[in-house]
Length: 260
Image (tube, rainbow, N blue to C red):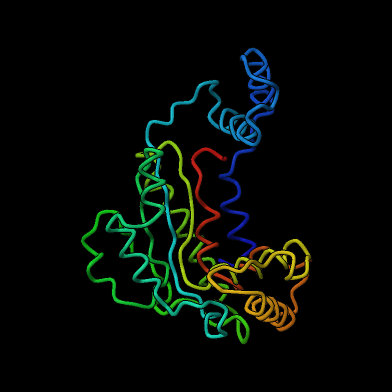
């Protein structure tokens, strides 16, 4: 199955939000004792959630945060002040010691961590019920400054894994939250954002785990060189961007029982 066939097959499963439920939600919110749009972006999220669930007061009794983790080959370009410690980060999360653990607990969410390609020893995690091993390349992605982060086949495999995990857990959870972990992830995110939005790297690149303006400038230069190497522009498909620049994002795009 090629990329176009994959997209055609699986996008059919995505339901368009019902505009009539958007209208019902707006009418309902107007009757509440709060200013119009007084909750800011939460108003928009509430409208999306109701339209997806087709219930004015959807029940979200079971929630789950899914964290996709993998190593990024781009770290070879010194875009992060940290070495490849993604495996240590994952072990910390599975032992309850990460910031995401605190946030998940406070929100009443379960936490699952998916190994999409972590370069490290995770034998101690295998018996953990919250660990899911689905790695495509155990060493993570290639350095996208010099080659595609992964092949089209690997990209489609990552997308399929996301769909399978979401469908497999959907009977247990009403809603998912998604995130990622992996040294070098903000560089991949910056490259994808720059290409998708047709913006210069300086507009979408943050300091990440680096320190100081000099490091940020270096990171921006690496992203710019990578985009030039791949000859990416705003006509490139999202699928092309995913397989050339990252891996975990391919998995992340597939999660939602409610399309929030």
